[in-house]
Length: 242
Image (tube, rainbow, N blue to C red; front, side):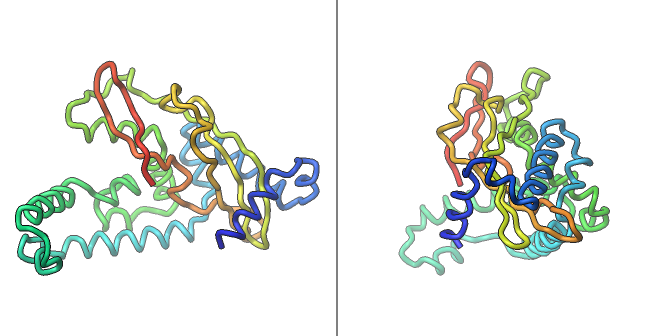
Protein backbone atom coordinates (compact mmCIF):
# COMPACT_ATOMS: atom_id res chain seq x y z
CA UNK A 1 0.00 0.00 0.00
CA UNK A 2 2.84 2.39 0.87
CA UNK A 3 4.50 1.81 -2.52
CA UNK A 4 1.20 2.41 -4.24
CA UNK A 5 0.66 5.73 -2.44
CA UNK A 6 4.21 6.86 -3.25
CA UNK A 7 3.53 6.05 -6.90
CA UNK A 8 0.31 8.05 -6.83
CA UNK A 9 2.05 11.00 -5.22
CA UNK A 10 4.62 10.89 -7.99
CA UNK A 11 1.81 11.19 -10.50
CA UNK A 12 0.29 14.04 -8.49
CA UNK A 13 3.26 16.33 -9.13
CA UNK A 14 3.25 15.74 -12.88
CA UNK A 15 2.61 18.82 -15.05
CA UNK A 16 -0.95 20.04 -14.70
CA UNK A 17 -1.44 19.77 -18.47
CA UNK A 18 -1.09 15.99 -18.17
CA UNK A 19 -3.24 15.67 -15.07
CA UNK A 20 -5.94 17.79 -16.67
CA UNK A 21 -6.44 15.09 -19.28
CA UNK A 22 -8.16 12.96 -16.64
CA UNK A 23 -11.68 14.36 -16.06
CA UNK A 24 -12.05 12.44 -12.80
CA UNK A 25 -8.85 13.97 -11.43
CA UNK A 26 -10.06 17.42 -12.39
CA UNK A 27 -13.44 16.81 -10.71
CA UNK A 28 -11.81 15.46 -7.55
CA UNK A 29 -9.46 18.44 -7.41
CA UNK A 30 -12.42 20.84 -7.73
CA UNK A 31 -14.17 19.11 -4.83
CA UNK A 32 -10.96 19.27 -2.77
CA UNK A 33 -10.57 22.99 -3.44
CA UNK A 34 -14.21 23.71 -2.54
CA UNK A 35 -13.88 21.65 0.63
CA UNK A 36 -10.77 23.56 1.73
CA UNK A 37 -12.44 26.87 0.92
CA UNK A 38 -15.36 26.02 3.22
CA UNK A 39 -12.93 24.97 5.97
CA UNK A 40 -11.01 28.25 5.76
CA UNK A 41 -14.30 30.17 5.95
CA UNK A 42 -15.39 28.10 8.99
CA UNK A 43 -18.51 27.17 7.02
CA UNK A 44 -18.86 23.78 8.68
CA UNK A 45 -22.26 23.06 7.17
CA UNK A 46 -20.94 23.60 3.65
CA UNK A 47 -17.79 21.59 4.36
CA UNK A 48 -19.88 18.76 5.80
CA UNK A 49 -21.72 18.56 2.49
CA UNK A 50 -18.53 17.21 0.89
CA UNK A 51 -17.90 14.47 3.47
CA UNK A 52 -18.50 10.75 3.01
CA UNK A 53 -21.18 10.48 5.69
CA UNK A 54 -21.33 6.68 5.60
CA UNK A 55 -17.63 6.48 6.50
CA UNK A 56 -18.06 9.07 9.25
CA UNK A 57 -21.05 7.18 10.65
CA UNK A 58 -18.91 4.04 10.94
CA UNK A 59 -16.33 6.08 12.80
CA UNK A 60 -19.03 7.48 15.08
CA UNK A 61 -20.37 4.01 15.91
CA UNK A 62 -16.87 2.74 16.68
CA UNK A 63 -16.08 5.75 18.86
CA UNK A 64 -19.32 5.37 20.82
CA UNK A 65 -18.64 1.68 21.44
CA UNK A 66 -15.14 2.54 22.67
CA UNK A 67 -16.48 5.26 24.97
CA UNK A 68 -19.04 2.91 26.48
CA UNK A 69 -16.43 0.21 27.06
CA UNK A 70 -14.21 2.79 28.76
CA UNK A 71 -17.06 3.70 31.11
CA UNK A 72 -17.37 0.10 32.31
CA UNK A 73 -13.65 -0.58 32.67
CA UNK A 74 -12.37 -0.46 36.24
CA UNK A 75 -9.57 2.03 36.91
CA UNK A 76 -6.02 0.74 36.73
CA UNK A 77 -4.45 -0.26 40.03
CA UNK A 78 -0.82 -0.61 41.05
CA UNK A 79 -1.22 -4.34 41.72
CA UNK A 80 -2.84 -4.98 38.34
CA UNK A 81 -0.15 -3.07 36.49
CA UNK A 82 2.62 -4.92 38.33
CA UNK A 83 1.01 -8.25 37.45
CA UNK A 84 1.12 -7.19 33.82
CA UNK A 85 4.80 -6.22 34.18
CA UNK A 86 6.36 -8.05 37.15
CA UNK A 87 9.73 -6.35 36.63
CA UNK A 88 8.29 -2.85 37.09
CA UNK A 89 9.31 -1.23 40.39
CA UNK A 90 6.38 -0.29 42.63
CA UNK A 91 7.33 3.40 42.63
CA UNK A 92 7.20 3.43 38.83
CA UNK A 93 3.89 1.56 38.84
CA UNK A 94 2.38 4.06 41.27
CA UNK A 95 3.48 6.93 39.05
CA UNK A 96 2.14 5.29 35.89
CA UNK A 97 -1.21 4.43 37.47
CA UNK A 98 -1.61 7.98 38.71
CA UNK A 99 -0.96 9.32 35.21
CA UNK A 100 -3.24 6.78 33.51
CA UNK A 101 -6.19 7.42 35.80
CA UNK A 102 -5.73 11.18 35.64
CA UNK A 103 -5.71 11.03 31.85
CA UNK A 104 -8.82 8.86 31.86
CA UNK A 105 -10.68 11.39 33.97
CA UNK A 106 -9.57 14.46 32.04
CA UNK A 107 -9.63 13.24 28.43
CA UNK A 108 -12.93 12.61 26.66
CA UNK A 109 -12.20 11.25 23.20
CA UNK A 110 -15.73 11.81 21.94
CA UNK A 111 -15.44 15.45 22.92
CA UNK A 112 -12.10 15.87 21.18
CA UNK A 113 -13.12 13.94 18.04
CA UNK A 114 -16.75 15.00 17.64
CA UNK A 115 -17.21 17.99 19.92
CA UNK A 116 -19.85 16.02 21.88
CA UNK A 117 -19.00 14.23 25.12
CA UNK A 118 -22.04 12.00 25.67
CA UNK A 119 -22.37 8.83 23.52
CA UNK A 120 -26.18 8.83 23.48
CA UNK A 121 -26.31 12.50 22.49
CA UNK A 122 -23.84 11.85 19.68
CA UNK A 123 -25.91 8.96 18.32
CA UNK A 124 -29.10 11.01 18.44
CA UNK A 125 -27.81 13.77 16.16
CA UNK A 126 -28.39 13.74 12.38
CA UNK A 127 -25.28 12.83 10.41
CA UNK A 128 -25.13 16.27 8.79
CA UNK A 129 -24.83 17.85 12.24
CA UNK A 130 -22.31 15.22 13.36
CA UNK A 131 -20.20 15.94 10.27
CA UNK A 132 -20.16 19.68 10.96
CA UNK A 133 -19.21 19.10 14.60
CA UNK A 134 -16.47 16.63 13.59
CA UNK A 135 -14.93 19.07 11.14
CA UNK A 136 -14.93 21.92 13.62
CA UNK A 137 -13.42 19.72 16.35
CA UNK A 138 -10.52 18.78 14.04
CA UNK A 139 -9.90 22.31 12.82
CA UNK A 140 -6.59 23.75 14.00
CA UNK A 141 -8.32 26.85 15.38
CA UNK A 142 -10.51 24.71 17.64
CA UNK A 143 -7.48 22.64 18.62
CA UNK A 144 -5.69 25.87 19.52
CA UNK A 145 -8.54 27.02 21.78
CA UNK A 146 -8.74 23.57 23.37
CA UNK A 147 -5.00 23.68 24.09
CA UNK A 148 -5.53 27.04 25.81
CA UNK A 149 -8.32 25.59 27.94
CA UNK A 150 -6.32 22.45 28.75
CA UNK A 151 -3.42 24.56 29.95
CA UNK A 152 -5.52 25.58 32.95
CA UNK A 153 -3.75 28.91 33.20
CA UNK A 154 -4.22 30.65 29.86
CA UNK A 155 -7.30 32.88 29.60
CA UNK A 156 -8.90 32.84 26.16
CA UNK A 157 -9.18 36.31 24.70
CA UNK A 158 -10.11 37.60 21.22
CA UNK A 159 -6.38 38.11 20.61
CA UNK A 160 -5.87 34.37 21.07
CA UNK A 161 -8.03 33.52 18.06
CA UNK A 162 -5.85 31.65 15.60
CA UNK A 163 -5.82 32.87 11.98
CA UNK A 164 -7.47 30.76 9.32
CA UNK A 165 -5.26 28.16 7.75
CA UNK A 166 -4.78 28.17 4.00
CA UNK A 167 -4.30 25.12 1.82
CA UNK A 168 -2.24 24.76 -1.33
CA UNK A 169 -3.15 21.85 -3.58
CA UNK A 170 -0.12 20.24 -5.19
CA UNK A 171 -1.91 17.69 -7.34
CA UNK A 172 -4.71 15.13 -7.56
CA UNK A 173 -4.61 11.62 -8.98
CA UNK A 174 -7.28 8.95 -9.37
CA UNK A 175 -6.97 5.22 -8.78
CA UNK A 176 -10.20 3.42 -9.64
CA UNK A 177 -12.90 4.78 -7.27
CA UNK A 178 -10.41 6.60 -5.01
CA UNK A 179 -8.73 9.96 -5.52
CA UNK A 180 -5.79 11.41 -3.62
CA UNK A 181 -5.19 15.13 -3.33
CA UNK A 182 -1.71 16.05 -2.17
CA UNK A 183 -1.83 19.35 -0.30
CA UNK A 184 0.25 21.53 1.96
CA UNK A 185 -1.02 23.99 4.58
CA UNK A 186 -0.24 27.58 3.67
CA UNK A 187 1.81 30.07 5.64
CA UNK A 188 -1.06 31.70 7.54
CA UNK A 189 -1.31 29.05 10.23
CA UNK A 190 -1.08 29.51 13.93
CA UNK A 191 2.71 29.66 14.03
CA UNK A 192 3.82 31.87 11.12
CA UNK A 193 7.43 31.85 12.31
CA UNK A 194 7.64 28.12 11.55
CA UNK A 195 8.58 27.43 7.95
CA UNK A 196 5.89 25.31 6.33
CA UNK A 197 8.50 23.57 4.21
CA UNK A 198 9.76 21.82 7.33
CA UNK A 199 6.62 19.70 7.43
CA UNK A 200 5.64 17.13 4.78
CA UNK A 201 2.56 17.54 2.57
CA UNK A 202 -0.57 15.67 3.56
CA UNK A 203 -3.11 13.64 1.62
CA UNK A 204 -6.84 14.21 1.29
CA UNK A 205 -8.63 11.03 0.21
CA UNK A 206 -11.82 11.09 -1.80
CA UNK A 207 -14.18 8.27 -2.78
CA UNK A 208 -16.35 8.20 -5.87
CA UNK A 209 -19.97 7.26 -5.29
CA UNK A 210 -23.24 8.11 -7.01
CA UNK A 211 -21.35 9.96 -9.74
CA UNK A 212 -19.63 12.36 -7.36
CA UNK A 213 -16.49 12.63 -5.24
CA UNK A 214 -16.77 12.59 -1.45
CA UNK A 215 -14.08 13.47 1.06
CA UNK A 216 -13.15 10.53 3.28
CA UNK A 217 -13.03 11.78 6.89
CA UNK A 218 -9.61 11.33 8.43
CA UNK A 219 -7.79 13.06 11.30
CA UNK A 220 -4.84 13.38 8.88
CA UNK A 221 -6.68 16.29 7.24
CA UNK A 222 -5.75 18.44 10.24
CA UNK A 223 -2.31 19.12 11.62
CA UNK A 224 -0.25 16.14 12.71
CA UNK A 225 1.64 18.38 15.12
CA UNK A 226 1.00 18.13 18.84
CA UNK A 227 0.35 21.44 20.57
CA UNK A 228 1.68 22.78 23.82
CA UNK A 229 0.85 26.13 25.33
CA UNK A 230 2.92 28.73 27.09
CA UNK A 231 0.96 31.77 28.13
CA UNK A 232 1.63 35.47 27.75
CA UNK A 233 4.45 36.48 25.43
CA UNK A 234 5.49 32.93 24.48
CA UNK A 235 2.15 32.18 22.83
CA UNK A 236 1.46 28.93 21.02
CA UNK A 237 4.16 26.43 20.23
CA UNK A 238 4.04 23.23 18.26
CA UNK A 239 6.00 20.17 19.17
CA UNK A 240 6.49 17.16 16.96
CA UNK A 241 4.06 14.29 17.25
CA UNK A 242 2.38 11.71 15.12
